Length: 283
Image (cartoon, rainbow, N blue to C red; front, side, top):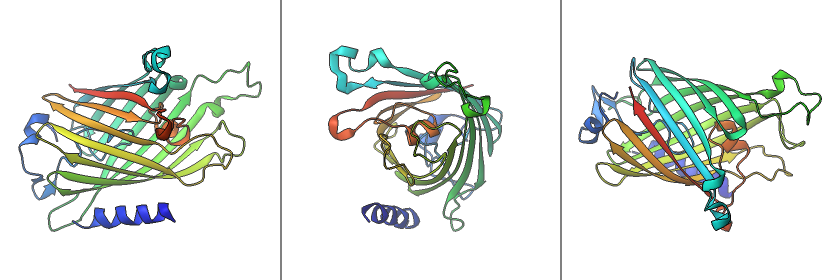
């Protein structure tokens, strides 16, 4: 019941009330040609994709780094010894269509993705920006020696998301992200391969260059025997000219959607959390 009340409150708030240069967006109004802009300054809120897209004919290189758990203290130098990295390239085919490729050291995952805007929030018009996101993943860490019946298809996973955001005012934006993801191989026997989640996220602007961001993934059909947790992440965005630097804490080390939604292992109450950052550069 608590989860349903949280979701109801979020939806109520969200219904209530690109990029030539990032610094150019900082001091401009949130409406351009009657369309709301810059609901989010980063392509990600923290873990979840935001409704921001790369501009037409621009290429973004993103480095995402997630250290190990800080809970282990000096044994792993507060997680520095157990870091994972994800390198991504995202290209704007148009202002409304992006394609991307990435490689993550977490489970040696390769990913191809598409992100596309369906409708934009408009003053005195449609109240939300709606963006679709699809990806296909290849897990190359699975070993046939340990899984004799392993086939190529078992390495594949898929994600389908609908990202729905609203810029409530010049300082505050919210997003809800209904998500379907499917893993051909799951690490918990009782877990369904097809899984469902709802992402909730938001951004609050603290100053011209700083904002605080938060997102949470509510897994809807996690197996009762699963050791994995719902991902909760908190971070800060710093805007500096040609890029956005995002610093964050999360209880999920994986940075692909299937990973942080399906395999988050940390626990905030135990201090089992991961520090990391996203750094993007526009070309």
